[in-house]
Length: 281
Image 1 (cartoon, rainbow, N blue to C red):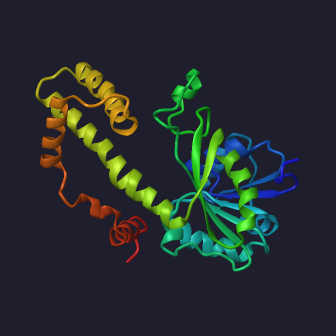
Image 2: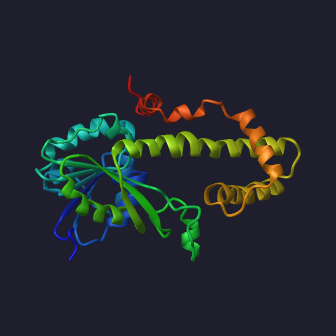
């Protein structure tokens, strides 16, 4: 029997982007599920789907797990409203590390708070179906891994929380238990400050290539294919880069990357980035 059987789970912000994704995966499971939403527009969209919206103040006190599916900048305000309503021993789950890392997540002393963030399907994932190929984000058909951290409270709550988290982000291959600080190093620093920034750089590079008269289809074909081979060589060592390519790589680093770029990993820079993201003074 699942440890979640007879549990009550409430999603705060169930009509938002992540709230909808998570709700879709949890509806119909063996536990009681409450969907809480305050936006009139989102409530209408939910009722159009024949979903029942519940009142937060009524269902949170009954909940074993409360999931905050709200944007980072609202976590402090919402958790301040939710935490006093939670019963002793309940678990508060948030989806991003920023608020927890910056001490903006308000938690009842008798409750446990856990952060769980999806890694999204790997570019190296073996995919077998059309649905898997179309699921770049994860949570529908393509398998993904998840990072999980206990922010405050009872570590023994982690096992049951991971069972729920694996359903939230299903299909899940593995959950990696780390610390909140380690998760903040992963996001924003590794995957947003660096990886997503590089993604935008590739987009801008494509636009510059087109300005030089290269046909768009040819440019995309070269870029998309070389993204795959570049990552395969650099991250998995499938084959070495050619000598000529290594020369171009070093010249590119000199022209584009600051010599001290690794300072983004320093705690001072991480703190600054998260404060900017959360719009803290």
